[in-house]
Length: 402
Image (cartoon, rainbow, N blue to C red; front, side, top):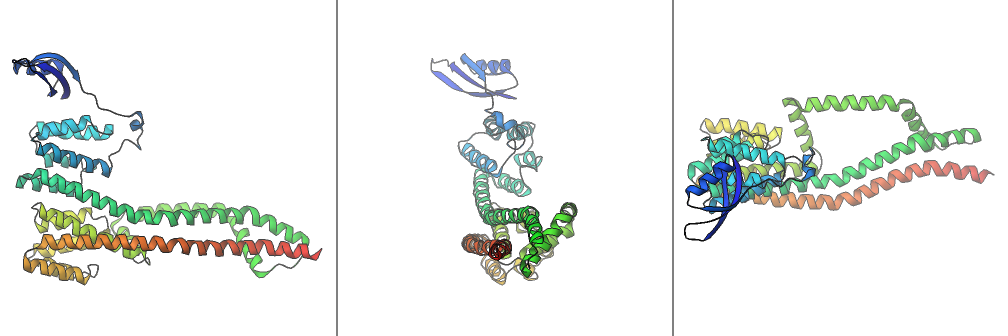
């Protein structure tokens, strides 16, 4: 199917303009003529694709794309535009060829009789299990426009808080990497020349200078072996992290890191609360919400916790009691859920917790960023001062001896 724009005159002589879906231009003309329109112009609509989007890095579907699509679908549904026509229009205006292809495939499936949720489920690399289940709940409740609005808001919140947590770690990682590279160059290029000069002079060398020279000699001799070992260790760790046991081990280790571990815990608790709250508002049952959330939470430890909780809830246990078994779920969360169960306001309680943990993550990240900069400055200053002392003091002693 293709989309065509047209200009025409109706039986009363009024000018009309719009778009029409058809297999080809001849079918489009025939369909318009059957409506009693005299066509003055008709043209195929081509997707607006930048040459840069042909590059693989740019030709990908981002979280921002899905947020925008969800908001556009909400607007189109509120304007009484059919699902087929909505996805055709979105495919035409897609930012990248990959996104246009996905949306066109969804439209084709809808035209073949598939529901929107089943059409979206055929593209799990773009539309997550959570997204598909939310749309399915919207179809069952007849509130698709509200569901897509919920999805857009949820994805916006989730992306913002995740990016803030990740961005907080980029600056110290960059500074640390730069420091390691500079120190490595000093140790392998500058210190060996200093050692040769000191050996030729024959003067006594301070103990800390001898230590630095010893480290330098070790790096120069075994730098290739160290590089190979690091690469092998990296590959082994990467493959191990892809296994269920490895994912859980790295997840638990990440949460034990001082300061950073607490941010990750709050991030995942915020995500769990937000997921469950959004799904409950859309009519998804709590058991299905737990199963879906476990697949999209993004952490092996909490995935295991949610899976176990889902099994307990399926066996008849209240959610608060199911979560009480797991130390990863704070007591305040269990207490709040129990109140929600007793008052019948689980959705509101989960929404309150999601907002609370979002604020906690934001505050923790701001505090961490404020503390990291002076801490990194002190660490770098000590490292640089130690290296300079090891290099300059022997040179000063030699100059003083003449």
